[in-house]
Image (tube, rainbow, N blue to C red; front, side):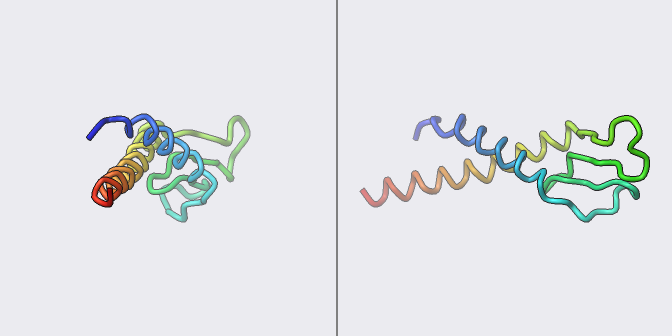
Length: 88
């Protein structure tokens, strides 16, 4: 079994993490802010006092989100590869 799935799974994981920023997360971490990203909320938009920069990125949560989606994608790709091999 090769390791050719790692780079595509990483790109798909990053894509899924960026796409999850479109989904608001209804958590109560900080009142006055809207949190985005699933499963880890990594993008914050301040709605109460957005004078300077209303957007903030939580980099550690973003990396957790990418790692989660990478794991999901890699698992699906490995299962698919094993099923294809068994059917041949």
